Length: 601
Image (cartoon, rainbow, N blue to C red; front, side, top):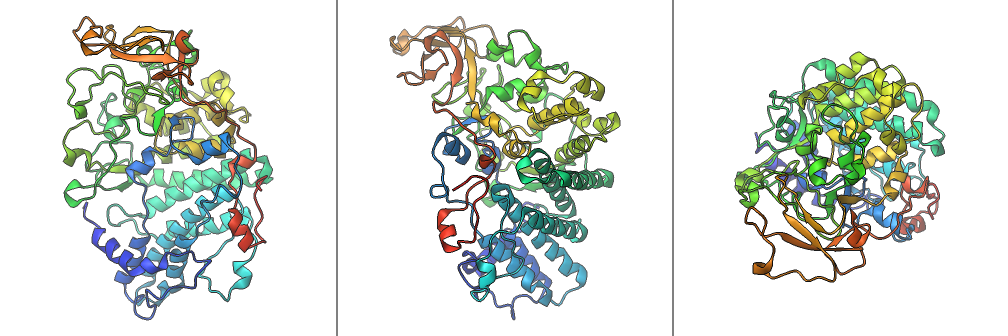
């Protein structure tokens, strides 16, 4: 199963390599002759296989950069926007249309094939699914964009130089594409390619995004249509639930099951996985992602750590003194997903051939926390390069149904038991009680989302927490913050572990010091001169100070301690401007009819 599609995709890319130029700048290419190519089902399959685009492990697990889930040293766009002087002249990415041209080229020609209507509609459904996803990326970025459903030529000047179509018109066309895809894509498809239920889930995802975005973004003046999309999201999710095709992966081991979902070498039979990206080292299809455990660009934020509930279902932030709890304390009696997502005190890094508990590494601009979700704890390359990636999973269906129903005001306790509480059952967490959540909303959540009001306020806040925890570091957080009108949360600079000051600290949970923080004025001793703990191990030395000091750990209060600081520049999220991106200035010179969105120039 893992070898499916590799040869056909490669052949297709050779055929259409000349068709990937910007369709607004070039006429259709002649690399594929429509008189010769669009004849058989094999032709349709070959072309749509070439359009397949599935997130990589690398891309998915690093996609929380720039959100409040992770600190990052990378040049992430939103971080650059909040700390710099962004304009349409220095933000120039995103206005690319080559993929749309390839999709529309297929849709302009697929009916030439001498195949049955069902076959034609299946492949057209795939292309229309990809077109909807393409435009989803565009409306998230620009809101209003030009809609094109066919290949343009240089003679189409009116269309080439028109202004943007309205968000309402574009999204309406996207939803038509998604409905066609959901109605016509087959259920039985090669592993690793989209089938019917992928299309229905993408329909639910986009409808949830658009419904909540319209509800919480007054600058669009589209609040009155929000429930239409929330209803589509609810009904699409319910259709998947009622199909009986999927369930939450669980073997009855709450301490391992969530982690195991992300380190499997074969997800083909996993009941939770709706779409996977398949890797196989023996076929040179390498997962290529081993950096989540190291200091590579991103590290989990303390705010994310604090969002996980206690094992009894109460908020961690209700504990007295939670703000000054240290690493070992933070992981005690928590939602089991915390220790299945982050390296925890006592975790042993077998991949580095450790035989004793891992000592968290501290480094400049990083939080001290590290991620183990998706990390195969093995030295065998054939194992860690062959781990499959769960791109779409049933957990999203359940949380989509719960959120859409809550936002519509029709959520019941039975709905929660069939959605959120199924996810909690996997890890042995207490159930979410609707009456308790609404009767006593968590202040930690309230402070994050002041826009949430109404009788269901408390349970909506808890569903949002559940999304953050269940999809932690899977690349969902930034889109969620944008649709919830929660961009101001990004103004808070991510911080890391708390240390009360200089001195010795246990990071493995055995009560024995592992590291020592010394002042900038002190010198780190040579190897033999370093202090030895009671286990006979040399302490790891760090110089601690302010972010401008010549030290190895940045603390809020320098030598007097505090949380680890990851960056210096202040952040400013300008509303509503920063929920969108500018059209590159060069494009507005080519087409003066294009209008910049919401405060961009």
